[in-house]
Structure formats: structure tokens, C-alpha cells
Amino acid sequence: MGRKQDPGLAVFVDWAARKKEMLEQRVAGWPNLPGNQVYLDLVIDNRTEQTMRLVFALFIEHVPLAAANFFHLAAHTFDGLGEAGQPLTFKRSRIHRIVRGQFLQGGDITLHDGRGGDSIYGAGGFEDEPYGLNLQHNAAGLLSMGNTGPDSNRSQFLVTLGPAPQLDGRNVIIGRLVSGAMHLEVRLGLDAVAAAPRGQ
Image 1 (cartoon, rainbow, N blue to C red):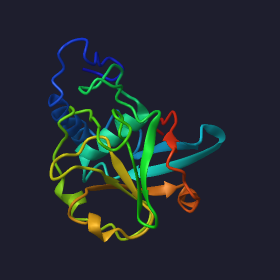
Image 2 (tube, one colour):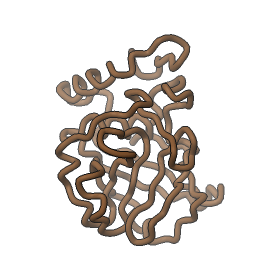
Image 3 (cartoon, helix red, strand yellow):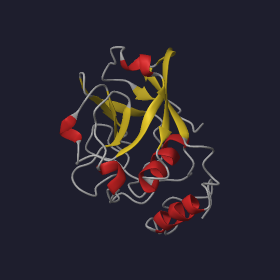
């Protein structure tokens, strides 16, 4: 099943098979991922003139499942609906939580309030990858997976605003911010949304 041909829920989709597909792409040098960078555009109060672009470098060689999931959701690579019945994209999803000085959290593409999520591997989530789980949340600008416990990664993500040691050993770090750090210092409203994120 190729990009832009995902039938979503129109026919049966073996979501778990995507894990094998992504790992095979890693071995082949990620032919479908142009580099390891992707960006999100954040919009405050629907004011597009205040769009804030965050560009992330993903650790695709070390956390291939999580990095590929984030890339494809940001780039809206797969058409159709995910297993949870919503489009597999960060577009129009919300930044639903901000812990000042520590992290912001978004990526709930189903319920938009932190209780939901989906992934390119299915709504049940996917496993923690040891490399990212062993990294420390010791600085601003780290991109990490949100979860509800071990091996429950879906679409939710965190971006650190400073050290957040309570996330160490619980959340998988999958990348780092390479552009847009100045936006992390701006007071972000809780109604910020990711608008039309695309791969880079």
C-alpha cells in the first residue's frame, strides 16, 4: 500500500503491517522521507498572520517507528481515515496542554483534548523504542512522544520548554527542534492549533 493510496476505513487495512513497511524503508534509506526534517505551523486564535513554524530533526535511524509516525502525520502522507475514524494528520489538531517552563503537548487528532489519538500503525498505539526511552528530557526543544503508559504511543507529542525530568524513562524522545526556538519563548495560548503542517 503506497503513499496517497491508503483507503482508510473503506476496505480492510492491516495497520500493523505498516511497522514492517517503515522498518524496511529505514533499511532502504527512507526513500519516502526527504531527509529527516519536518515542520509544524502553529496558529494562535486562528490568526494566520501570526503563524509560528517549528522545524524538527527526527532521529529516524534510532527511533524509526515513532519518527516515521510523526513524519507521516505532519506531512499528511496517507489519505483516508485512520483506525479511529479521523484523518491521519496533525492538521487542525490542538495544543491542548502547556506546563509552563517544561513542555507543551498536542497531537490528539481524534478528540482534541488529550484523551485521544491514532497512529499510522493503528489506534492501539505502538511500542516504546529503547534508544529514545533512555534519553533525558534535560533541555528545551526536545520532541517526545505523549502516551498513557508503556507501549501506548499514538499521535500525541510533547515539545520541551525546559528540563522535564519527570518524563525521563516514560516518554520516548524522537527528535529535536532545529528552527523556531524563539517561538517557544512566546506565550502560547491553549487554543493554538497546528495548521496545515507539511513535510519538509
